[in-house]
Image 1 (spheres, rainbow, N blue to C red):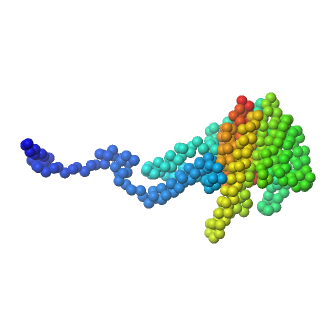
Image 2: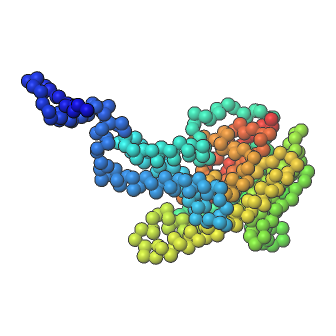
Image 3: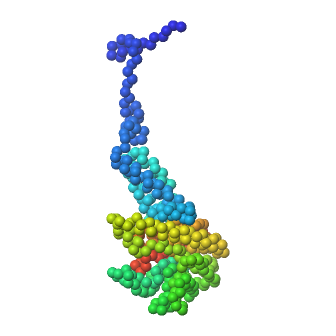
Length: 411
């Protein structure tokens, strides 16, 4: 077989050569040019120190958001620490969004993780925030076909004295003023208290329009006095009862109310407390843990109490969810759940119900006046046969909770 000889030409003078030509170095344009994920420059360029630090921050934040999502699905009895993660879901979501902005500005591959977490988490954004653009500005004040209902944790009808958190005085007059301003047809109260000094009869005498009432005292403090839940109604209460939780002072008071042509079952719930004391709140909010040599044991105690009460609330939520499912009438479930929307308790209770805030609320939703006003723990849920057309949660300083007032229309 004849031997083949490869002949090359030198481009400079046209002479033949037996050598292979030198491989031409590829220019930036051969890779598509420019900056971005597809450019050769980006492929060769390494992360800066700041990029590495942001990646170190972005990964734990993204993992925290995922854990806070999963907290709704997992019973605290199995994984209590995940419930604590759910408590910080709004903060983690904002932190992830800030990380996303950084990576968008830098336009690096680090954008993928916070972007995926942000997009997947949009479904839960309305649990905490509803844009003002979606607010319904219609005036429903004259519409008598609507059912107006308010839930309010009144903190024992007591409030702190000015300049002193240890001195308390009666807030009955302030609570009455709040009720008068909201003008509900049905009023549900938690931590409702009657004492010889401030009897419930004084409160009831100032609200003559509420002809029907049911009061359930879980803690007795003398004949006819105590502490518990109450339902006041301008419509007849045809039947009522309570769900008592063993080993706690919490309960659910329910009543079947004949509101016009419809009968609805109203559940007024006060679930297990978080057991976070005022001193614990100040310890966290005022950043007292910074520089505290005992902070490890102090924080461990706070987390331990939180976890323990998550478990108790989960059991109470399971019980309440079963009673809601068995209701013979459309249900309205309201009260102080002592848990956030990213919790197992909320998910169980809200199953097959509508959240009034997600329907008609606006802005950032919070009802607890503490912990930087971050927590929504008071709710107004209702059956799908109703529609919420108005939601409000105004802030008053006579309680550590905001009232939640809604207007519902039967479909």
